[in-house]
Length: 344
Image (spheres, rainbow, N blue to C red):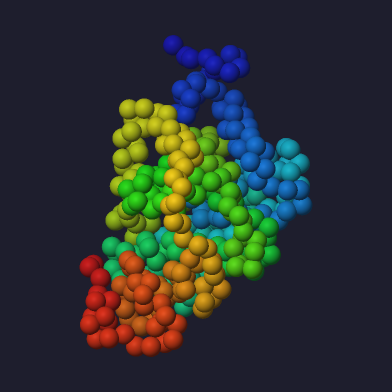
């Protein structure tokens, strides 16, 4: 027997919301999804009228839905934002080149300006070349660090006020779990923030996550029923990523308790540090000027290792070597041997 929409009671329901369990028709689902995103934006005061906002566009479902919804809400509620797309080309043959085609189609469909920055342009390396040197076990460390800085550099080039990323509720919950498992107190203390500070002389542009409370399944449903074009293939280098284990665990929890994703986020938001816990002091990198709690930022250390043929230099904790790296002093033969090879 057909189920009626629990919101309007006029149309036939086409889905059951993973987040709330409500049966909704397409129109009511679209409205609910968009209004919840609007509430996230307004309650956290993510934007100010007249700002130029760069949407981090990868061509995947999250950034595609984010770009579409922000354009809709900007027009519906007259945010007064100047929106544009910012993409990073990591240099992954057969993956990023195809996803960038999806971004270019979105640019035409949404009529938004597009800027693409590349690892090769910024760092002199592509991810394909990096993987040849470091293997597939630790490549996500390089890619994550470089991509974050590449977004900031692209945003500075465009002189934007804020960067919007498509991080959804699942992503935030996974990050909470990862930081708990790693005992990373500093990141755990800030990973649930819907926006980050910035705008100083360190080249960091403020970021925000309008889809922070949107479930991944609902983003997929929204894209499906809206017939949005996006690239859905998984990165060829990511199967061994640590995040994948947190994701699998979270999916098992969600199957038993659908509210588990929101519960994990809520727990992360309400965690507090006891007095006396020493936190890293934020400074700037002595080499490139980017934000860092050490003498050298992670990006510069990783690049130094790649350029010296010592890929392990940026993997793990090697802060004691930063002074010698800055002084361009050679490492001892024993140190070089330890830094040379990674397990493939």
